[in-house]
Image (cartoon, rainbow, N blue to C red; front, top):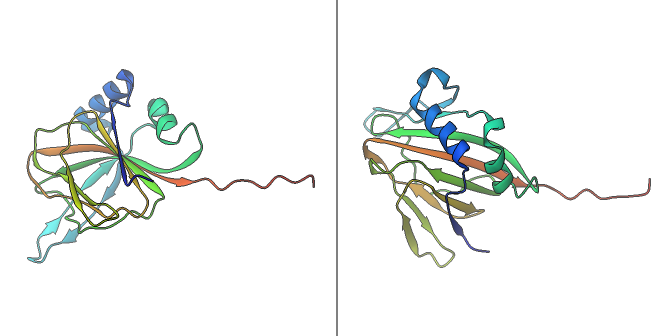
Length: 168
């Protein structure tokens, strides 16, 4: 299985309009997380994510879940700035696989790094409409954002166990 798969423009125009409207109107934000960690200097590090209205992302969710074949654990929009980010080391997600979709590239930093099974390092530069699928066990990291705001939609999924059918 490939470690990373790349897709372009998987959101419908309506879904993209909804996300852009949501990003632009803070009064519609429903906060999902607000981390208050500190770096080695004792400075607070933040990143924020907001919950979208799942009913407005039906086509996207059908695509990433392969029409319900996989269970969606969580979907949210990350908002990362120089002042509000959680700097992470290389890690792998606890989900079976995940998706990240980028909405802008008018920021500095924020690149996506990962290692393949041969321990070769790869870099993906975020660009609007780019979606990456990250399969289980892929070590990855998001570079620190140095300037601007990085917006991305992420979704964590898990394999749905098959139901054993019996006559009883």
